[in-house]
Image 1: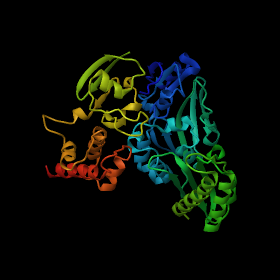
Image 2: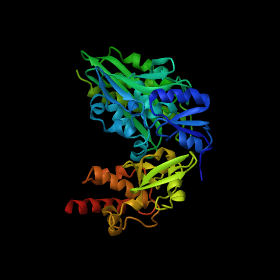
Image 3: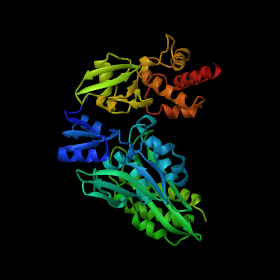
Image 4: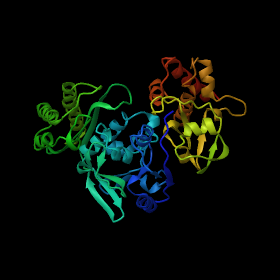
Length: 288
Length: 155
């Protein structure tokens, strides 16, 4: 039987209360929401917090909607809610395509967007999707809130800029008229972590690419992105040869590791092919 | 710590350790062994119960998280001595052999039909995609859930 080691349990009644509890318990406290990363790690003693602060009841972190020209996703939004939301699907098909291949429907009922990002697993899907669309993360601490570009949010495997005593409260994604996006993943079996996956975001203006975002996961891409490939795309027509070349640059920029999911050359091949496919669909979906 | 959990409509108050998982709370504290305990890693889905009406893998939920909430287990499907249509479907269509995955399958099937009374085969397979069955090849489970959908449509 796998059971976590003993810990203190506190249920946060509000966001300020959660901050107060984080301060009281110090560095060895962890926030828990869906728990689908943290609880398995606690069972294996890969994580052994002294205290868990349960934020599942904080409705103020579950908001999901459009605020002006920004899509706002509360950190406590469940994967299932993001997948079910029609507005999200209209503006950002990349999120629906990523969510459909994250774990399974029952796990998605419980796991949260914020939890996935804060876990900072180097193979996590939403990290690539949010990187592609250049989201911003809003982090609240005792001194107030700060906003961090998602491309600066992850500082390494399982490490983010969220300090002890702070809470990721929401993700903000700029909505640009006419932009298109898509997500492509290869997994060994349904619901598994990716062998490789790529997200793409393109905005065309006057027939050329005005804005390009590429997100990559599970292939050792720094900050889940491929900035050289993005820069190559700007100002060019979204035609096959251009997208192929961008995908090649993206694949070259990765540093995949060989593991049970495949060797380096296979993963690099996937990074390129999936980037191309995601870019192609993002281009089809972008207006003008 | 003291928790108060409503399980299948009945309130239970227990003194438990925070590290107790919901699956063990149901089985060991309440004696509701219909919920099975399997892989312990939220992969296999035999431990699925409904928490406030939503299926969750109870090996990855702390019992303290259910404090003040409602849990429904397979024991709660039967109404007034009559099996739920999804249970009847598994009987009629031979939806199980060893039965280990069945309670979790039933809880997810019930949730699916509550949201989508007429699911096609693809939708059924998607709904149960986080749950493993090593006996049936899923074919008869899909038929069982379709049987329940048709039964409910005919009433």
